[in-house]
Image (cartoon, rainbow, N blue to C red; front, side):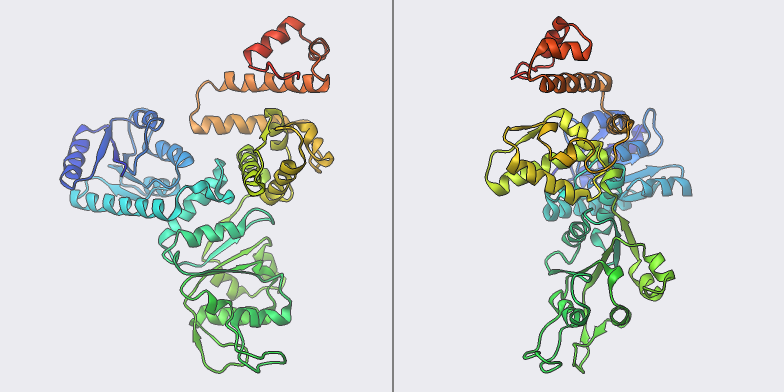
Length: 465
């Protein structure tokens, strides 16, 4: 097991915690500043972090933010002598596991650390790598909020409502919530309420007794019974017919339901997770959705951002989907050129993550070369991806890339981005001229010798072939 990290500029606090953890046979490492701990992250990872808030250099809250951008599942216990509401709220908003005001009882502190260790171990066993599902790939701040929410809900049975456009991965997030919950070893049952005819949906959800209607030759268990002890995911809940809204509300209210044609109540021990691309508040105002049901479902709400709001994640997702498609088709994996990744990052993707996945699957099948260039994209994607492109889109994408690098604490950002910029210009010019250097140099407005030197510096020796 990885160690507990203690971060505090107060040597006496570090000493007390070190001695107590040693007696508890818990491995630890100590740092006097958050900056020291941040540098250590490049070499190793903690199982749990116990950090002060106010220290020289970066604060504990800044460290918490940077840590959770890279490793959102590591629990962090925030300590401070300034026991005020603002500090507590800031700690929890930043994703802290717990808030520990000074002075604290050392036995309580050790018990808290044990709890954090247990949660960390449980997540590591149950979740594995967070990258296993594409919906939770990403560094964008909006996705970090989703990461934190999944972590915070890992011990909860609360009803969750997921809002998000089509293709953002609502069902995958629902599966993640189930997989990380105490019900993980029980069934996860999903049903799209908009995809089932109205006259069949009631039987689909609640089941029916033999002879309940024409064609009901045998008793059938509905989705509520199939999900017993586990999670029932109701997708596109905003389209549920009004009479079924009433039945669902009754189940949520008293925990019982009846099969169609049945007279004996059946106990429903399921966690309800719902999702919709619609604005349920507007549906309530329009009289299309029951207000009391909305409040029952809206206990915890998660918002999944559209892909256009997390454009910095497009390269990560695109590479993942190329790898996934290659594995599924048992073919060699293709690679994106930097120019293509930057081009895709400037697109709006109205179909969101699902649309990007479909595009990557198409490229795996249809692209003849191993490196995917802009010219290899389908015609509708070569200019604007089916969306009117704005001249400043590449500047917006650049600004997003710079912001993401700053948030990660990267160094040498200018050199890295300038190299990518020059690489893109040269590759596209050479591609346009079919590798003719003199013509490419003329179009770029630089000398042939300069172009040759840049090709060597950027390791583009095969760019013109």
